[in-house]
Length: 281
Ligand code: NAD
Image (cartoon, rainbow, N blue to C red; front, side, top):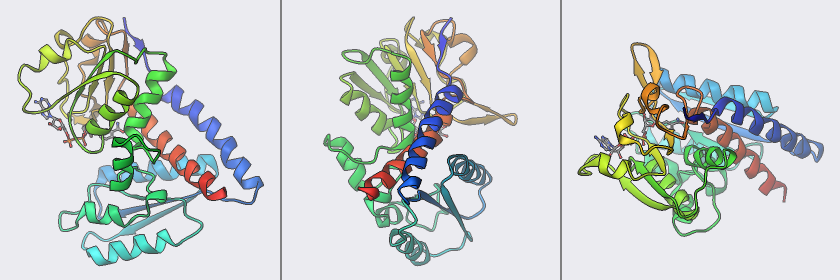
């Protein structure tokens, strides 16, 4: 039976450490602030935004949630970002995605000054990751590496297979695993004979967005299986991995819920605290 990589426990430990870093900053008279912009009324996004606010509260950070109507224009959104760029109380700016379709996501994200881009989606931070320079790393991939390291899963020289090639998960996690000296294969919707690849994986990351997509026969015995997926099935949140059967084969496995998602919020908080620490310097 696989060892569970428990996101709740790991995130709680991370939050403890962050709390004391926030307090150290406060003692120096420096506050830590995160601004979250939500455009429109997408119910899933509302839940994510609320959870981010709660995490800020837990750490004693300033949290500003700005709700904008669905018909907000590109100019209005960018003007708000500019205002937050200039606001010294705000260390991190997050634009909750997806934005309504009439808005240009990439253009909005480019408006955020890279130092306050705590999601790590700005092209400058993405470019830094891909060229091995220090920058802000996207929260979900950063959280995955944290979980693997906490559990002492060997990475160097191992074969990591990532299913999914999105800019927010698939590509950056592949790059981080490469930086950890893994041999990395990226699979996607056009990959032929997917399971032949996944069966070679010592570390298998599933970021597809389809319930029970990764079945036990696709997994090498003893592999570390990281489930990034968030799918709603009959009102329940499930991942991309057929957990019940894969846990019998894998060496390590993350649950959904209570796995990668928990770490994502923790890493958002860490990126914001790091931004405030840079400001303090
Ligand atoms: P996306 O839709 O942008 O990308 C999905 C990827 O899956 C694509 O690159 C596609 O090529 C690949 N894919 C689709 N069908 C496939 C197939 N049949 N075989 C192989 N590959 C296939 O999604 P995303 O933004 O990367 O998110 C992926 C999942 O992770 C979603 O369920 C999302 O909700 C979840 N997610 C979770 C967190 C978290 O914090 N836990 C964060 C971000 C995303």
